Length: 286
Image (cartoon, rainbow, N blue to C red; front, side, top):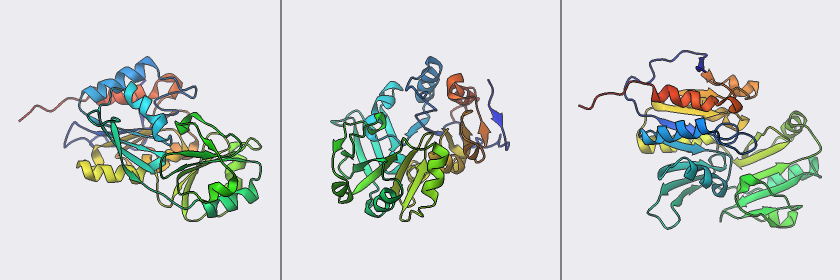
């Protein structure tokens, strides 16, 4: 399937054939069962082998991101985790194969106090400034990447957070999102997921903010950036990129900010986007 262009920016790669390609994980690289198709894996590995800068950009925490990085054969570079809250440098020569180069922390207490009043039956978890997860009610999710430590709500109020997660089984995603909007959360950035799931980061921190720091560090022009995603936490990233591509199953508000819409995750939409990059004619060396 060919990618459908909404705004028409065919001349964005005039200067170079190498791109900074920023990829969401869930709903983009892998389906909602966590499986990566052969087509996506092969084309993504082809992009890495071709010398493009592939940056995994995800709401997942680091521990849950590393297996995806290894699956794609990325041995060096960078990844943005926790919706921009954590940035890591990848290098197999390091003891762990990576180092955390930036953590954006915040005080979760004001948001938690507002949330518990409106959502008393919700489950709460947070990643602290040491990479540990603390949770209430045995709340555990694959996106944490580590086993969460059960704590009381009062103990959670005392932590320093990189990522705060709220999950409710009592509402739909739309109802949950409307309820959160009425809280007037301040001092944080938040996004509502596909279910009644809320991800909260420090104020002004998004995937886009983390990626912009890397773009400047690595020396790419905006026109050399490509981003692909499907969730509400990808809105800023797709708007930021020179070529922002929404997956076919993305909500309307995500598609609205994208330059292109590709096929859904179950139809290998990401593979179509990556093939379009691989199919570009390569410049001859001087």
